Image (cartoon, rainbow, N blue to C red; front, side, top):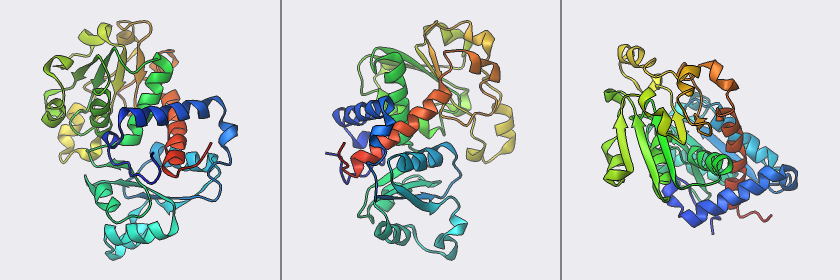
Length: 305
């Protein structure tokens, strides 16, 4: 039963509960109009202390497509935070007005802290470089819909693996399924954190700095951008931002049924020429994100089909 639960990390839910969300999302994909009144009378608050386009818009469109309404802010300067109000007080206040709170925050652990002060479900929409659980739900639905399974896959994850919260969430979750092998592709400075690798068996992953050399092995290539906002030194960012660029030449090395995913936004790590390749699914992935968030909202609010 997911009603009333918080979602701070994907591992807050067991595999059966994840399957329940994904299965419901697939039903919504098949017939969105059937669920257009499901959230009527419900109110979702979006508290975004950090910029966002896809996550914020997809949550808001998900709630509206369920028939619910949205309040919130996308700039903490427009809230009482600018007056010195604590996160705890903001959370308790907004919980009085809404049925569900979606929070993005630059500080790791902030949504978890907020959940201690909320009587309504809190959903972590990204906390610093830590976790991004609803992006992972998006990724799982995309993989399950396009590959037909969530097991027996070789998944290459490329780019910023040090600060990339989407990759941290994805690895921790996919590793719970059978026969998932990871290839971590990054420069030395952006290697995936030790605490993530410590949760994997030694034969479940390998690390490399070569994208070309690993392409033929992959069932999924998950590209990520080098995140300027996570760097303290602009020189380091400029040096690393063009380290990997996926183009048509590299795509020729891949399997005919490999899919390319990306949480977006991209900067220059995927050339626009790749967009025309049927294996490039990152814009479809963004749409799956709306559907899976519709399913999640419905489950957390205990709405009946």
